[in-house]
Image 1 (cartoon, helix red, strand yellow):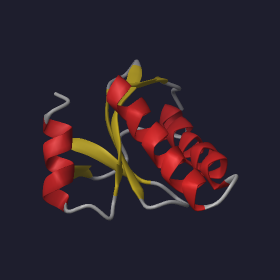
Image 2 (spheres, one colour):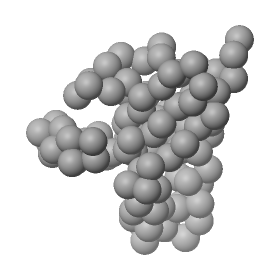
Image 3 (cartoon, one colour):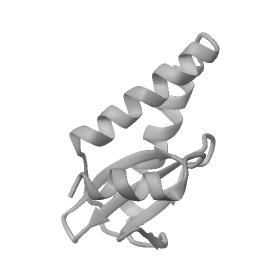
Image 4 (tube, one colour):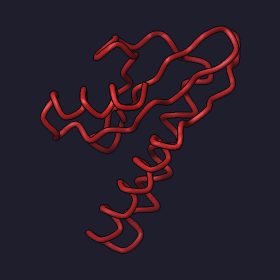
Length: 102
């Protein structure tokens, strides 16, 4: 099994920051748990990139513990995370956000 390097676009980092802030405002410590959970899902892409369905032109991994989709592209060398988007949004809004990042 080949390991790949994972790179997060600045927009994806911003998505993570927004998610952490939202959950931290709900309960102290929940933001850190959200961050750790999402990073764990993203780290899994080092080995499992490419097995997820394609939505909006990018592979889409559903986060295990929080309602987020992790959109990414990959090749033999690396995985590029395009966004970490809230699944509770209208699909059209997710599509617009991903297209603005291309």
